[in-house]
Amino acid sequence: MSDIIRRDPRAEWIARNRLHPLHAAMQPVEHSWMGPNGIIRKNPHGMGFIGPNGIKRIDRSGAQQGGATKRTAAVEVQLPLHQVAAPAFYISVVPDMVGGRLSSHDRDLLGLAHQLAGKDGAVLAVVFGEHKESAFATAGVDRLLVLDGVEFEGYAPEQRVQGLRAVDNQFSPRHWLLPDSRTGGGELGRRFAAALGERPATRVWQVKDQECIGRAGAGLQDLARPVARLILAAVECAEPVSETRHEALPVELSTTVARSLSRIEDLGAVAVDPAAIPMAEAEFIFSGGNGVKDWALFHRTAAALGATEGASRVAVDDGFMARDRQVGASGTWVTARVYVAVGISGAIQHLQGIGACDKVVAINLDPGCDMIKRADLSVIGESAEILQALIAAVEAYRNDAKRDAA
Image (cartoon, rainbow, N blue to C red; front, top):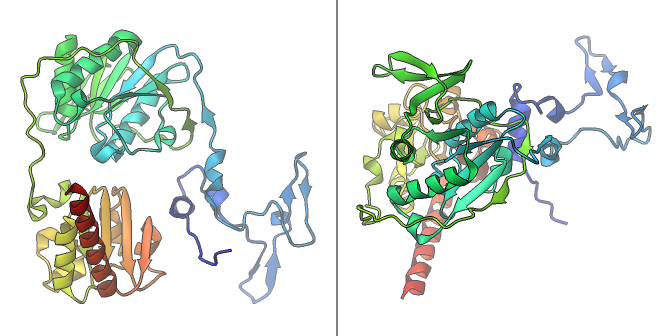
């Protein structure tokens, strides 16, 4: 059996988050501790376990069959399953799915959808093209409809509107929810509203008492109106689903989607210099801190990965990076899909600034630093050696891809 110690970052995050509903279950039970006067104290009520008949038992062999001495992700399967066998109505959500995965904005939208669905309705997620998401169930999706096909690939808003109209004809959702974002949801929602003849509620940040409250007046005022059928919601419009898991049952359209005569030609993606991307909009950030000793190697690694460079406050104060590259509460709050922290110990201001990042990778010599505790993936070792190996791995991958293409 392997002697490698496995970590569960999600379980550790739940154990640190006192507001999470599973926080108490992830805490190890202390049966004895040192009192202030040096005497060992014991908690007789904390010993033992609850048997299958509900009676508390004490295992005097020390095995503690029911003890919670180890944090494990198995607690996640204890989340109650939310099932809607025969939905009275549907709340349709069209997530942006940037990079083929649900973003934090998409998860907020699904949380708002469940507020509108209640107990009788079901949340129907409509996804275009292939995706890489495997957590639709824990994000709150009751029904999943994937519209794939070459006609939906790339920038095809007219064809996607046709697909949404077909969904509207078959499922007749009570409400449509789309993210009011610059990554596609805002434009698609407005096009879809025009096709349906609906007046959408835009920039909505709260739905309460049958009213949509949205931003107006350059974001300085709130505009309240009755809940619209089509809602374009802003970031943090609701709390994401975290206390239940859902079926995410696949559904299909009963009819084929009509092909639209496209007046738009997609010429493909345009290469952008990662250094020109604002920190707040970057999807992939490669950030360096006080532990980086070879900054030339750091820059080469960022270029090889095609990542936007960032830095901690210490690195900026020392003059290694520009001030606009500083990440943290005293710099720029970032929402990257992937955030790589090289030689950053994890000051509280820095951790606040990366709180909305989806995946955090930490490279550090100190296995007990706060950044390692926050990271989803940790690499313990000398940063220079790890970065050199990373560059070699990227070059080998690209060379293999070129050979396969040839």
